Image (tube, rainbow over all chains, first blue to last red; front, side, top):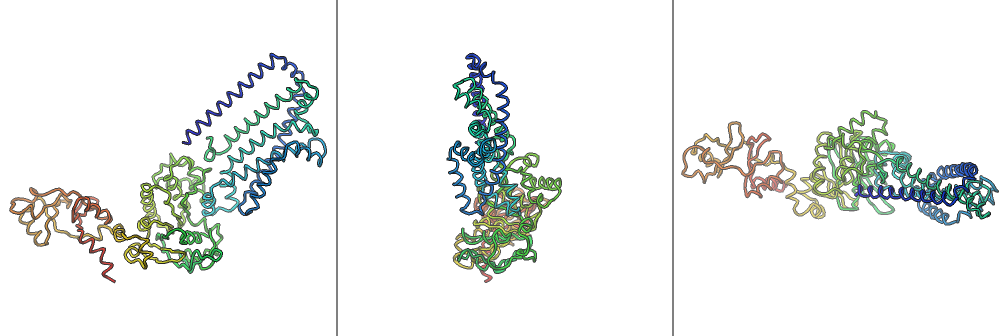
Length: 248
Length: 368
């Protein structure tokens, strides 16, 4: 049964890869024949500069989100919290419904214009799926494992590090992957509060009704999102140990 | 080795374990037996302090466990649970070595020990040591669960319905494997079960619980032969005397130094021998004492010559170390009222009859 699932998962992954390549190829053909490519190439230097800035925003806000989200998730999943944990988790769930733009605007009113409020807003946004998946992953660890661990003389810290986190790792990694995909796709909005990134090209393109400029921002953003998701997926596949990785 | 003294656990006004006192000798298997919710698991979990007692004392090897750090205590006690609880993120060998690793034992030594333990439960170390738990069958996982508890060589083992979730065929096999391990390692074992047959098979002593109280603590044979009240009698079953058959070996029930003939004996000698013992048949043995067959008094009537010309084959014989349950089963299957008992080499040791078995089983009732 497990084998069958694995085959199915591999087949799906292969299909996904082929479809993505076909899409990119079609876009490429369309771009070069319609002359849009030429228009885009004109902004080559801007694209390079803003892509780096874009990635910096992703790396810093994503890093902050991972570094804070996992510990928060671990705290919320503690059984010793009683009802407090689930209640807080529900509040965070509620937080995911707040629109991205609203979060950025709120951050701007407190931190002013520029990169810091953008990074803060993005980190908060990215935090939520990581916290939620950490909580879900830890809660899904079978109680029997924890009983066995305690009965064998593990301390609470050993149970957390050797049993709970490793067995929740796949779900936590899935949360990070989702969070990063959302993050990369949301960074363009950072431009609206002066945070920089590829959003500069997109929004300027919209304002000037310049399709070439617009695409010069949009296509690299899309490619970045695909690339980041692919890299995160590969990391998840190879870094989560085989015993707790349903894909392997 | 283990002594529970007036052990009590109260959960918000409900007494889960009520004033239980038990003493378990070194190398004994004590089975805590009873229906669900009778307090047997709670009693066991108080021994390694997964549950803190409300009252009473627990001594292991003369030392009060409440004075030991619970983490250190648990590392010195093997623990096996019904859900097995192998860690999916660790390989089989790392699972086995969890406690040795925590105790800071040398990695090479502990991994070598893990391989030895795997061999003891018939899992080839080269094939299984590096696997993950999800790559093993349920029965294989529970074997690993049991040897994991033995890895640090603790003197005491706590087992919470360890074979409860395994199919009946595998369960028998694993029980037998465990008994073999136990015969070699002589651990002091507290074993929780709700299966009377398992208890009779494994236990040196059985403690029967009912709603938190210890009702009877005795050897399996005494529990089956002399249940203290109707609850114990009902719990062990109306066929309890049949269950006792398993506890007695053929050796204990057989008549030794039996009469025998050889193929070269004269028919008249054989007839005279049978008449002298009041038997209607006699076993014929070879020069080394191995069982060849038997002759019946009736069949020799009016015959001449040697015994070897008139003998019949035996449909079945029984090993002296086998239990009476198997012996009786063979008798019933072959419509025989007696069986020849042999050693591993096939040498004739004695015979058992249905009469001698019923007499032996009844002895305990006549004594009282």
